[in-house]
Amino acid sequence: MSGYQEKVVTLFNEAQQEQLKEIGAYLGQVRQEKSIRVEEIAAKTLIRQTFLEALEEGRFEDLPEPIYVQGFIRRYGDILGLDGTSLARSFAINFFLFDSENDSRNAKKQPNLYIPIAVPYILLLAAASFGLFYILNPRRPTQPISQKQNSSIVAKQKTSPIPSSAKPKISPLPKVTSTPNSQTNSTVEVTLELQEKSWLQVKEDGKTTFVGNLEKGERKTWTAKKQLTIRSGNAGAVLVTANKKEPKIFGNIGAIKEVTFTPEVNSQ
Image 1 (tube, rainbow, N blue to C red):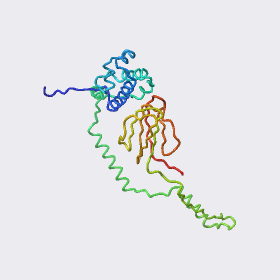
Image 2: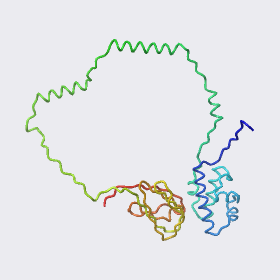
Image 3: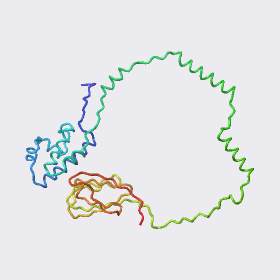
Image 4: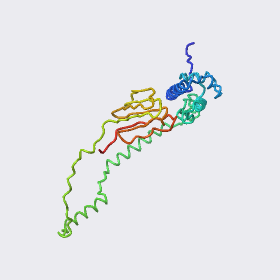
């Protein structure tokens, strides 16, 4: 039919779709590692099996509204022994849809302002009169009061000589030499050491260079020029060493966490 276009409104924006793919893949991977069937998860969480399969496979078009999906993630994570609350909070549910019908209604409600034709001519005439008055009576620039006071103070200082005893003694400034010990790192370096198994995603200067699992005892190092982003599905299992500083635990056990590291100024 000509002149007709169907309006499609999706429940998830692009950022939420990307989050669902990552979280669903992580939940499915943990379930398979623990040899738990989807039917068992559905029976324990009281969530439809079709919703669980759609969540694992990233089929967001088969899922209900984001607020319900957040509850699915929390219950699913708790059944697998993960921190379901932290996992659910990592999925943002706040977004806005553009409502063209409401905007058009609000536009119709706004009153129309009527401006008489004579008003612009009156304003133009007043502006021309003001400009003519300014041209015929130019104002001389006046010296600010603060400048007059400064000039009088300078004149007094010139007329009254300063005694030699009152003159301050100026000592030579110490020479400043740069030491080779302080330097600025032009790159950022992050080393990850796994205390337990964890899913990881690494981005170097916005480009994804690693996605997958690292086993317990594995140690990997990545470098980037401007920024290096680490995302872990089990933050408590990752020991992070950034820019050769003291190693620190990335986060809590079972929590999803993402941190971006940048170059720093180090003193050796």
